Length: 221
Length: 222
Image: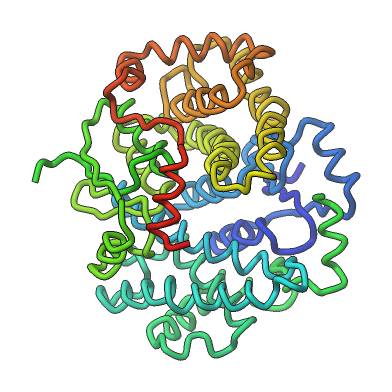
């Protein structure tokens, strides 16, 4: 028993990736236990390790935490990445929730059936460029600070960088109309813990490959 | 300007109902603005009032808050319904998130096509009785306390009673295998602020009907 948080998921991004980003940003080393087939999920359920029979599950500080938001909230608070008071938390929460909505769209894309892919693609990029990115560009413009909330690095900066990079994987020039997001991206990417996470060999997961999709679907359905 | 929180949403439950429950449980009076037309909604967007062009919107303490979970977390934090420290918060968050997944099925139900409603109702019953209610039955049994977390009334209790009542509306005998939840339901219904909210004339909204579904579709132009 190493004392490090232990993440239970499949070997891919999915709903666990924001958690990996947050732990990495906080400089926290973690272990991973990967599910390869449905039996692995069934075993975790049978062992009573999953409160609502679902992953992500993170073993941390004697708890078996489930539910992505509960896990992220705990980690963010523990490592002082959640603002200094209730009102900063409220701003962070509003921004994070929107980012999670966009993340849902980006994350679901590889798993869409062929006849739905094109429409899904158009919708997710439309939301990114017309609903979400303009808000964060404006936030940065209005206060002129380096970080989104409270002039201090927080979970929301980590989350925004994550979704910017994910969106760029689908449309490399997606930030063309957002100069402040471009400089934000450079700035946050150079934070030492983030820089380390962005290097090859880190626990950051790649985009799913076509050949892996059926395996993931089989684990969960 | 009254100083009371002001809620903007449809005149129905939807995503705003947990917010109404939480404010009511905290004993906080609030005002409501009801969306009835797409012009009203478009005006809100045009006026830049909806950060991500979506409702719920709650104007509270000088903020125009959007995103249901952000709103609920703020209210729970402000009114001491969010546990006393980090580990209690983690438990509350887990329980609330699980219940929210169940409530999502109920939220979407009125909008499902008629031929799928039977299957969706079965799914709600299945998830409620095999995935969610057993967890809370066990939590209550194991610690033997009145409330889910920290021996103190919290957001998790409010969310659970809302879910129990919503599922019971569709499946009246759903608590039949869950004696702890039956007692919990009676106990929490008798918390004075909750009791008041459960009485006729409160801001609690009725189950969604055809008019509600049509209004939502009309406002969002679907």
